[in-house]
Image (tube, rainbow over all chains, first blue to last red; front, side, top):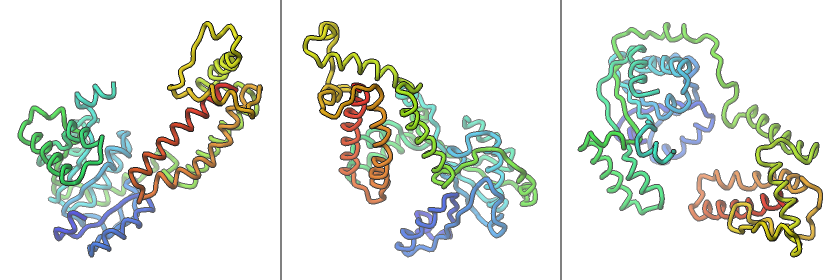
Length: 105
Length: 228
């Protein structure tokens, strides 16, 4: 919604069927965001391949794809969604900070 | 995986690292986590923490998140190549909140509960020792019991509900009855609490109330299981 408010055409993908419930807030805000139910481990929909200028994953790879093989599998699919020259942003949790190690010790 | 691993794997998939940074100043996040501050405080505090992270690279270990920005190279990764990776992959067969996983969860819960009717001492972690300690504590209900000279009970611990429960008129002498009671009570408890706790419109006060009642009930139930 943050990007859509700034003029971006946004498509949201999530494997959970409840994704459709996310439409309500965006529609209420007058934003046209396309939400689709899709699993990153499945081949991407043909109409979305190389369609995007920017891809952002939020927790998908860091949380749901912790095993190397699964990570590579999902990453390959996600990469194919962005056109050549397009950008990818991966915000990811790194729970290796000194403070967090102290807390969890 | 480390950040270096992430970058290496991304580069293998035709991505080129353009920029990187950090976000989520842990001290600020912890400070904001303990209280539901007004938005007027939250925004400047959070932004102040992020500013510190940007201004002082040495604070990198105190960032909770890293961000990596990549650019996709050329046309190396064509969709056909992606499709070629779509062979069978073996991983978790169940998905969160799917009917299959829900069935497995309740089946496991039923099997664990059923074990309490098969034997009074199922091999649950801690359970036999709770029952054993409970037998001891039950003897301590008698003011003349010799155990009173050896032990004392602490009402403030999570097992602290047992002395009151042990004097209840409904308490059976059979070991394990408390466990059976707790097992029977679990499904209706979850049925009531789960939708409340997951409500999108839940209020902080409601969450605190649920936590409190859950803790109090836990005290009593564990105490009940212990003393029976």
